[in-house]
Structure formats: C-alpha cells, structure tokens
Image (tube, rainbow, N blue to C red; front, side, top):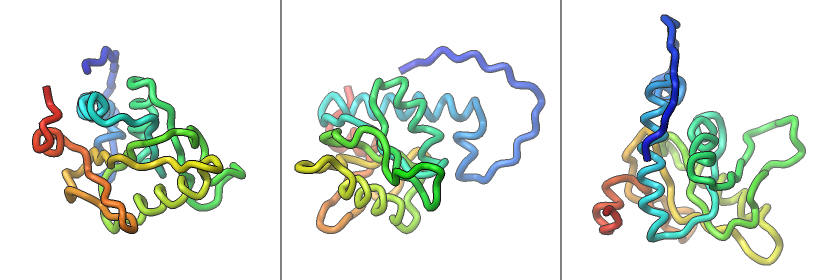
Length: 165
C-alpha cells in the first residue's frame, strides 16, 4: 500500500530512544506504516478484524495513521491516571481486533489490553484479539493470555500460513 506524503525535513536534530525511532523519525514512520498496512491488509483478506487496539505512545504512534489508512476504528486502553474518566475508549462493539505495539518485553501491555477490553466491552459479547502486530520486533510467534494463544502477525506468519498473494 503506497502512500503519498510530502515531507519537508530541515536539519533538525533528533534525540530518540531506539524503540521509538521508527515513529519519531518521519521517514522511518512512513515506511513503518506502509509495511504495517501491507501486512495487516493481507491478513484481513483471510482473517477478519474490526478494529485496532493500542496502549501508550508507542502503540498510538502507529495506530492512528493505520486507522486512517485502513478505515478501521480504534480501541484505546489508557495508562495510569488520565484526564479522561474512561479507561478504555473507542470501538468496544468490535467483534475482533488486532493489537498494535512496538515489541513484547514482559507481555504486560498485551495482557492489560486484552483484560481491559474484555472488562469494558458491551454487555453480552466480548471483543476477541485475533493477532498482535509488532512494528519494532519480529517477536515470539505467539503470546498467551490465559488459555488463549494470540499469534504475532508479521511477514513470516503470512508466509507460513500461505496468506501472501
């Protein structure tokens, strides 16, 4: 999925953490979003999902532009204290969603996203995570949340499951 962006970059000096460099540098952000859109579009042709879920700046940095490109609503799980009275906002009526984040370190972010969306979903049905997209790490092949095994979605996953065209 090719995007047309006009970036006029001056000689600004960037100071970033390694894990945020793919979203704080506009050129790297563009290629990161294009790659994510390609992978998630290929997945969506075979495995339906209705929304993108994220938590924190590292997830938001890619979730917002992906939402606009793919015409998918968002589910935002807030961290800590916030000006909002809602811990979870967005498409809580989505049947299924993809979690978007930078990497899996301890797995806590993924666990919190799944738990909070389940807790705040509309009454009689719960949104189900169908995958995790990590833009900064190929990551493990799966992440376990309770007894549920959630696949990490990347090009390797698409190839192994014969989902690439």
